[in-house]
Image 1 (cartoon, rainbow, N blue to C red):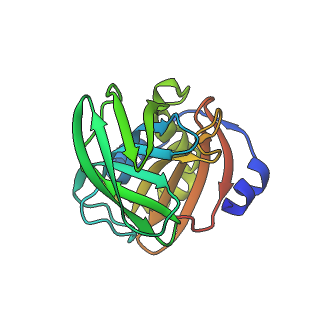
Image 2: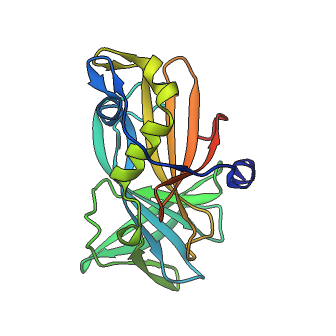
Length: 224
């Protein structure tokens, strides 16, 4: 599991200042080339129906090619259900009901669907799958490290990898900031995963705490 969570979370690194890179600073270049960034993260309050809902922006034509293209809003549902078939569930957001087909992903072993919207984090959300019902709780509102802060931490930590990819206002890579839920929604189970993929196939991944401004682990293996 992610190389045993990077060999037991092998380092603790505090955030420091941001470095410059050509005509633009590192952070601005990376922000302009985010192929996926999660800003809001919900998780179900029912242990028998484990469902996450991550929302933000991602590439419209989603490809792992080191290039960041036009962005669209997303709200990705990921559910752990006892089947390998497409499942019809119902999601209720602020009283508005919608049927959602959750397709089984054989690579992850989870059911997924994109609502193709951007959530604010203030919504009241309920999901019904079969005879199971769960409320989705906004976990990200209690994060001690926001998506913006996590991005700053990641860019500073990986500056030696990022700077050679800069050419004036161009950045020869794409970046991703996602939430990992390693303990299926239980307390302290969430972590930030920040990845930078160059257009020649090089990749760096780090894990950042959601509670303290620290890098918890670093690994150069491809985890996307």
